[in-house]
Length: 360
Ligand code: CA
Image 1 (tube, helix red, strand yellow):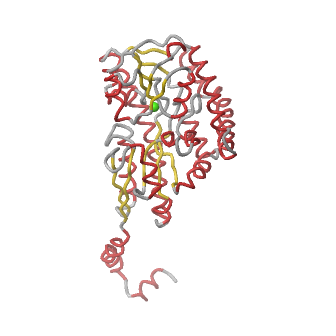
Image 2 (image 1 turned 45 degrees about the vertical axis):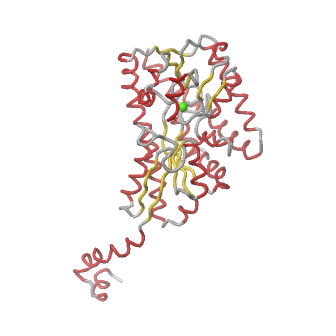
Image 3 (image 1 turned 90 degrees about the vertical axis):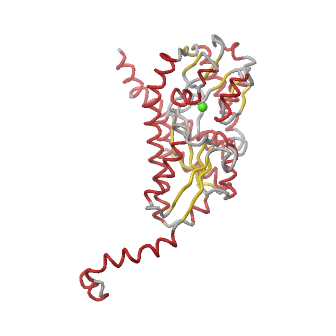
């Protein structure tokens, strides 16, 4: 039926637009959905907390308010490290955090946040979206009734804050350091004592001497926490977190209850935030580094090559052991490992060769 004939027959005619608008609120009012998003970050923390806010705002705006997402900072609804359980149980429909925080539940989750000496942000996104990584991640979270999605990336992080120089591996011995994920196990094998702490507890622990050293993210975030006031040496590069993926956790049931268009909005909002956060970190780390060095007189130091080589050896051991646990773990490791090999071969003659050429 042609549109004009249809309008004539239904008697709507020129009034159609108006009557649809009048009718709309009744239909939409019933379809309004409210979601809670719990996060591992202090509320509104630059980059991470604001990234979660952006995700919630985008979903709310793109859906024209049909799906409203309210963000809760760490401890507002649940403590930072209970975010995964809260979404798994259905206490909250969404979460925002990083997958290595759930290593106690699923050790392989760490592969979807950061692998020491693993892949950069660009490479991680390539693996997740076009190398089969996202599918493996979803399969891993299946039994927890959670759908994961990449929703942010910090880029290469910094090596951390120390109150003494690290001139050899021996300087890591006995060092009590806050460090998450697989990097924690690597530090342990290098003789250190890794400590697991949510972001909000790092500064006071370092200040009080409860820990000797810490890593957090990079200049932008570390400046915001004032870590330079508690340690003077700032080491690079962040060998343990070369392109950390922030994750959105979505309740499988809550997602299944959404109409198709809202499902698409949720997933695409994650993708937007994933890209946006990396751009924000790249831009803001530059200026924050300048402030740390020129204003706060932070001493910037590279880890010596032999320290990095030793940490790389230990990392390979740790990664292989975690992956040897079962068949599913092996599958994730194989996928990650072969993608990394290919990405390295390509980046050697593209990104890496160009960055070298730029400095000649
Ligand atoms: Ca970190």
